[in-house]
Length: 297
Length: 285
Image 1 (cartoon, rainbow over the protein chains, first blue to last red):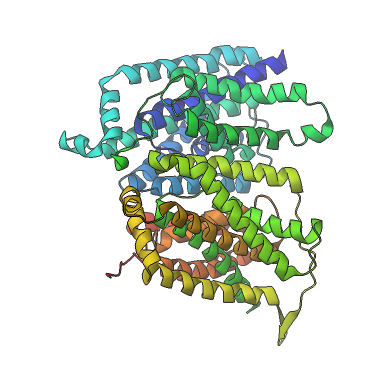
Image 2 (cartoon, rainbow over the protein chains, first blue to last red):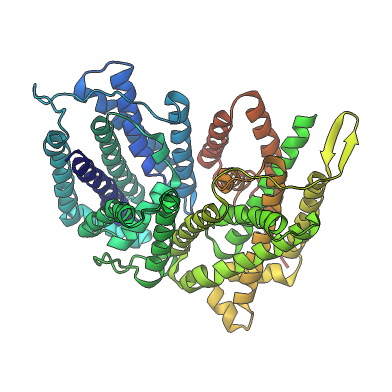
């Protein structure tokens, strides 16, 4: 049951990150935030340090991580999104690298352990299922509701205009920068929150997850599921959790299992190239005119 | 003094990688994320020629691996980028991300993830108490020669004119009978060959490891941004200076500090002077 609980929690956490990436950042503004995993890492690391070293009580330890990621995404967005070109992607990679380096420097390559789970109104959350049911699931549902509301709101039309034709948006007295940075901040906040929750759930942090490859896996899942599609995000995270388990089940020899990471990496790489080339709408049918940004029209 | 020379080598390697990025960027306007991994593959090709195929002469192995890496680059371009060219540069960028993780996985599956070194016995040059490897001098000489050839061909020849025309409007160029596909393939061959030279130079200095591509590609990014996308002169000057500074930063503090330092410079340049320190000036024909 413990194993099952960790799989379910993994799935929910992956789903939260992919929704924050797909339905709040890429889907709305077509900013390919390649260092997105950095915000997850910042959330986890800050929460861990706050609980472990500064002895902050319970849930309030989440706040500093949220604040740091908010200001970082504000800085990265405001400094690079006003430029045309790929500067955002470059700085985003830099952010990812710095986060990993800082995390290594502060808490070592193994991360930290022994983060105490807070209680919920006096109720102990030491049972994994209780934690999933009372903390992760409500956040998951709240984020889904937020995403659905966002997709149906007038704000989405503005974002769509900004995405497809910035000059037209400017003509309508809409400043594209505000909407891009706004979406980026919301997405980063959700990722940081997910990181904090994960640190509480796993009682530890893992800096080895903060790599570019993790984001490439997320990108391939976003494209596979379909950009801006909620079902697509959930399907993608389901695959991200299920495929390694299935592979583990089929591959029994120790030789192959020591390379299972590379095999998975290979599969996702081919999947990414295949999806980009042959089915840009993804499985769940995302937006159609995605790969025709304004520079080509 | 020895550290200065080491920094010079690292800087030349970084400017080789940055030159590869800039070549592709100048013609297709996208960041080729697979470039660092192509560099890594070039270094491993050389290892393969030396240790597995048993090529005796190191210089032949280098030559073979440069050609093999160039062909790999052209293959990647033909299979993964060419069909996407009409769909915007974002798709090519995503595709290159896929290629980069595929290349890394394949190399790790073949050569394992442990560090390797070339088994070469090389003549070294003694200047006072310092000894320099012959290949270290060759790297710098090749850098200077290839920089002169590339910058001349980009600014003074019809090829350079064609490149600039392609980057602004590929469809019309094809109408005018200019072989767009061939020119783009030539560029991929060139940039991959440069990457192979960089990778081999790096492997001679520091040994081989599958994650080597990533670290140096980050620094090469930083150099490209600092110099200004598309400025060859800036990339060479910036790359060499950057390598020397980074090397001193690594020696006197830690590689973490060096990384943070590089990225902070890059962020500051992006904030204050987004066109780079050496903005591109086009010469009128």
